Image 1: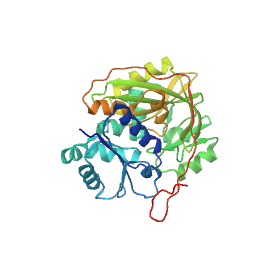
Image 2: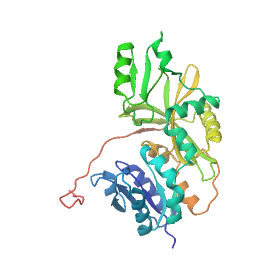
Image 3: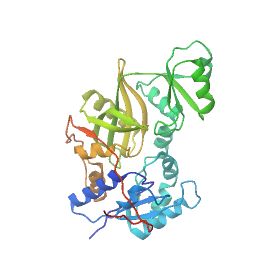
Image 4: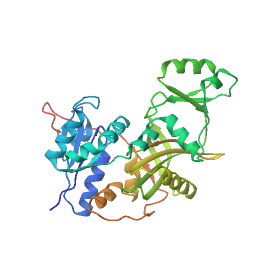
Length: 326
């Protein structure tokens, strides 16, 4: 029987993602070990996976070789990156990894990743293709008379780290000194959405799921509502047709008085992706079906107007790093 084993990199707290792949494999009645990799043996997702490996840090010169080693030991069919710092390296090394293993690396082209990982590149791409974005200010414009509030964030940041609302010139001066490679935009208000998109390996859109961000914590959604907003779905479809990524993509946008304005595009599973997966837009099942050679069609077969409330849980491990069952 063919195995479709999956390696999830930088697994961290992605317990829901591990479980989503396990459920999808069970539903399809296929053999699939979910293998989690992380540089820390205290990453919770390791203890929910079928197998796990402690990997070097991404900055290590042997990181890629260690991934290849795991893939060959565990007969991995699919490699899933989960954090931004993995993306450029994996897009650079995709062909090399795939030539040394039987695995497919779920990563968009190097061009797409470079657009998405650099927020200045993202801004330019969106502007050039006639998508609305908050105005980005040049250093010269910031020296003149500008309207506050503004918004500042790092050029290559993630998880809302060092992203702040700026209320006056004094705050702007402080943030400009402490944030590495900052970009400054106008501050926009409206309904904020995370949109989970799944595309096949030829960049054909299969599902688009808008999620209203009701509440967030540390930049990640904690409460969200699935809303089949036709305007968002159509505009994101137009964006995907131009950008042409593959796999699971996470788009951040706001519906403002000017319409849909894009904030960022992350070419990977976002932390809240299990919400869309559980609503019926199952990217994990879709990936298995693609690996099995199936042709997928665009669909909206997911539940509308349902709310997800995420919460923390904990596990206990003993001195041998084995789960203690109470």
